[in-house]
Image (cartoon, rainbow, N blue to C red):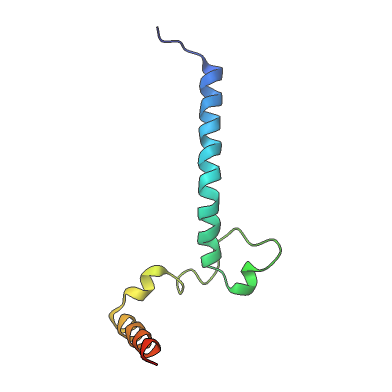
Length: 81
């Protein structure tokens, strides 16, 4: 038989939401920290909103052709020297 217990359903969903929040919080904090300057990250209460460096520190920024060739040449020089 299917039992309908709204209180048990509520607590089950509450536990699931808390679990998702516990898993997602470190990922969000890492994302925010990657958009902040170093001195902002090292502040005692780190800001929890993305900073102004979000665009310039974007991981997709390195996909431009000129930057890839510059990065590759720097890497080659560092390995050969």
